[in-house]
Length: 431
Image (cartoon, rainbow, N blue to C red):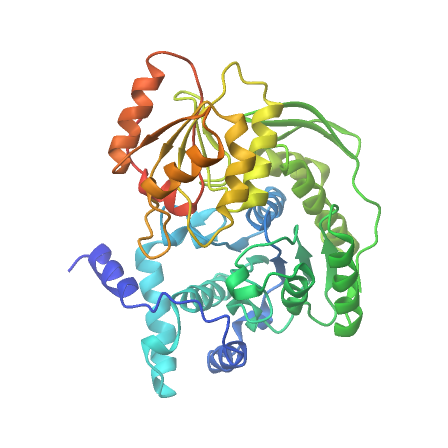
């Protein structure tokens, strides 16, 4: 059996359910990490929670630290095209062979304590493998992004953090986190650790910010109240944004999207806070790191094909996508390949998106249990806006065929969006 076959066979055995609703999960995982001699305790961790922007903020910080010459472990979710995207070290994604190695190393200890593979969920296994691998590779820093929620998230097994960063906190996963913003904020604030420096997104809701500040004081952490970065946008395009940051001109941010400027504000606050803690980070490292920042499936633009892939999967994400499309002043309204999960607030997403597009090709995301079918999506679109052209694609290949036909008659941008599962559905199919 090949390494790839071994890897596929292994990950298929994982329990894919989220266990964040179980109050005993984090205490159990703390016990497990203790069996492994607490590798997290030798790591300098930058823990990032929030709703939207965790991936972008984490990637900016990761790239700035790498540009300074540090060795950095980065744990990010959800993955878009392959689960291995979740774990990278010095920008190299974990290999299948490495994952198997670290899994076996951990599983041997887990079995010795009477537990089996199903006693730990898939996301929990990935978290454990990340921390063990980063410790073994002697990472100088670890950028650790929360998966879902905060207090009961698997990443909250860590005992300490240098920085606890909060990106914008808004509504998402209401079935798990509840439908009250303040309640969601309290759950997310549960990651705050004693002694950590706490940083918040600059445009945070007033009530959310108050909750974060109260949680910071209760935990014995320190609220970062340094000077807010001064950021000016000069030119925005699908390839990225030219900016002035704290007096540094001609800074190019490789992550496209108007909303990335607010995420950049959070990342620069983190840079200032790290400097305050004695971490050397030069202006050149900031400039080079931001230029190198890229994320699969997040405002991922292919200029040769004029295709944008963006896994905007909730109302906030769609609003950010729409704002970016407007800022780019495109010559034609885009054609959108769209697939949405039924447990999202898809009516709100459609209300924001439809006025900004010329046509929609409805697809069914690659998640049969949660997907809004292409037929259902098309019906909702026609009910909300009968001026938008709608087509239904039975499968991803059909969606691409339709998009190609549209391409023959105009230079319209094609946008693939609505869910990470939508991006996975069209992965590898050429436009």
